[in-house]
Image: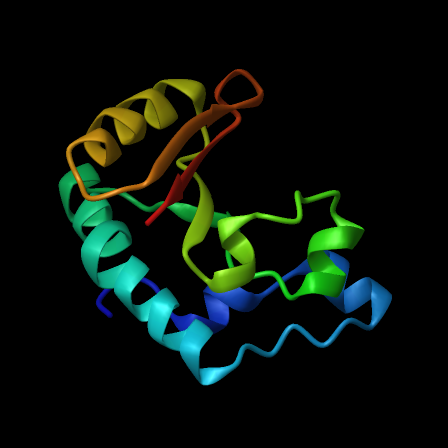
Length: 118
């Protein structure tokens, strides 16, 4: 992992505030590692500038707390919500992610972030 860490992908302000333990199981860590190596690091390399993870892994309790769907790939550590900090940057990120392996690629909330899942 060159640009992203497991800690970054499991960090959640909602979990912190609500006292939710968002520690992943080993299978989830393996999925997060695959997500980083197959998608996130290559995207960051192509962008040439920072990408922020808004949301990565979510345990079931955290997923419910943020209003996530029961079938969310976030629950398996296979998804991340990303932003460059601007709609224009996110548009470029979306184009880059479209060329990388993914199962889902969603333009969220008018481009406030991009959701990608493997």
